[in-house]
Length: 154
Image (tube, rainbow, N blue to C red; front, side):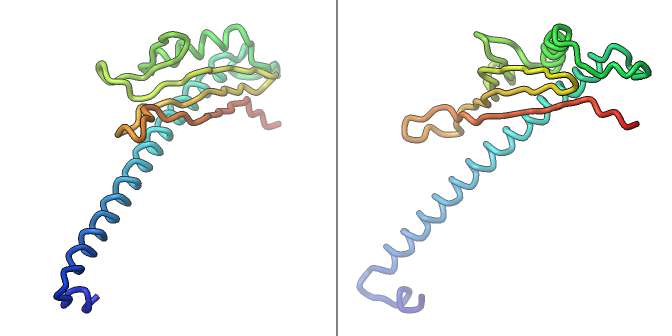
């Protein structure tokens, strides 16, 4: 490093600028990754909460005395949509969208709910706008899966 600092031919400045450019590029990549991960985790948490509330509210007997643990499919769909609506989600063009004012935060596309006895599974595609337009890519798509089931310990 001393050699670059004491260099009289002018390459020290070029190397310094090159290292600064690398530093800013790595910072940009790290910031983008952290932003996407944080929004994905927030969306996953909201989806899990809605699924847990749906499973809990969908039981025929809340005290589970009659051991009827199957989740009713018809009421679960409506309960789940009500829970998403109460959490601030809106349904637009077949996908669920979360907005802050008019700005899109993230969305869930191609959402499918599968109910098999005591388990409810939700599969969707998490979509969010990129923090910066990168090579013509304006949205990030990540698959998301949430499972919620009735737990009964005898």
